[in-house]
Length: 103
Image (cartoon, rainbow, N blue to C red; front, top):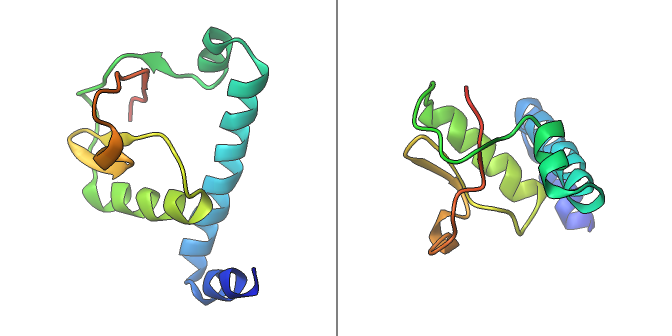
């Protein structure tokens, strides 16, 4: 625990902020998916079904988000920013897209 806190405090302030933001948003999503019927949770989270191939794709921003999510949670869903893998892509295998976010 102390080692983890020391590594977190050694990060630049922007990385610390992204990590805290990722942790809070992961908690909100977890609560919504755990407490609400799935369609309601998707609506509350403003998630549209299917895959999105349009919108802005920023590989550097996707990499920043990927690192923040990896620090905030060891296990997470897979995600991509366009064709750029963000998290969990190596284990995505036969999963089907559930939702897409427009940029």
